[in-house]
Length: 334
Image 1 (tube, helix red, strand yellow):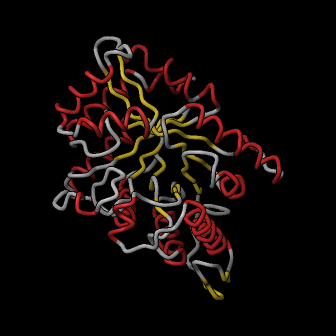
Image 2: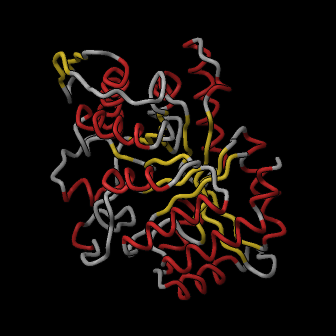
């Protein structure tokens, strides 16, 4: 089992970011991903609700520095949304980061970001199918520009004409592509064709299993080995001293939300709908995660202590240290 983390870092200083990723590598995590956001959000529709004075760093500005100051763990985004950058520019950026990292880059992409960020950029209000089609064009252009001397593609959303990208990334044949999705609906066939990794974002086990089944079916149709694709799952993990029963969960989440300065309704939604959630003592964490990951064919967890949104540097690193000491050895032994 690979054990990774998403370093959200909203509200952190640049010095805290640097200290954080260096310690994350020292703690033994296999990968450190950064979110790709313009401002703090919680999948809100209204731009007016965006917090305007909280530090949020662009990952593709920060990742070259992370690459140069670490040596072992994989690095990358989770996830870079379709439409954020022209894929020809993105191919140039990612090629350089892959070179600096000596081939440790994972480029994670998804069909779109939260509605408030799309609205803030004035993006067209594409359907889910439209966003997936745009992502497919981006992935095809990236793949070609990473590998070929010249690339041409005329699509609905992007056109490149005999485009060149040099220097090439050091990873051969190209950097890892990771595609993130929640269900089987739009992206599983694209993943079967191009993804080296997938990440399942969502807490419903039946939906996650359905997505994996669809991915496997598409792999069979395309003649690709399903087992070649690494499967990950995003997790929010909250440690407590005692077992937490179903009737106690809301109260425990509400109390932790108050402790870390988070909206109660956001904490409840996150742990019940948005991510794989574990709430309980460290002693039960490995077995609980195994049932909802490895037993389903998931071989990477991407964990966040308490929450996948805003959390202080101190709270985040305290949680990662505890997890690395008490839980990580058991997961890596699976």
